[in-house]
Image (cartoon, rainbow, N blue to C red; front, side, top):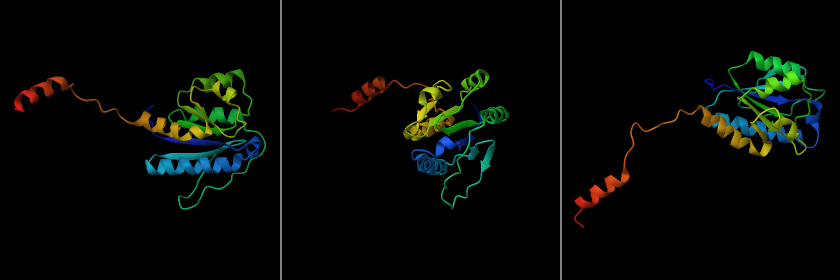
Length: 176
């Protein structure tokens, strides 16, 4: 994946309004925003309900509670993912949505999809069938670091150095 663009999609379905998930979601979004600002990462936020809609938050304002209702339109999500193949996707969700076998296959083929299970009741067994990159909310920092590391160019030495030979040669010259 050559793109360093990260898109954070936030599940705003009705199930995300239960069991303290709204405040957990706010705190997760605060952490993502601080992390990406610190490391100068380009990120866009989107809400997912009937459609995928971009959210525009001013850096000066705090993250607010998002309205949650109804069901997330999985077809809209899959179509949106098809239209944005060159971005890394991080989906914050509790996993309570139904997929057709074709949608399950489509999501399962994505190496750049990171699923974050939000809430103590997150359906992690379901989310684990969709991506090898499935994590609990408390692992968000680990996910962000993995995404950051995958963008870092490895600095490999141009040649190997035999440290044992260097040490032996230096000890002969030392006269101790």
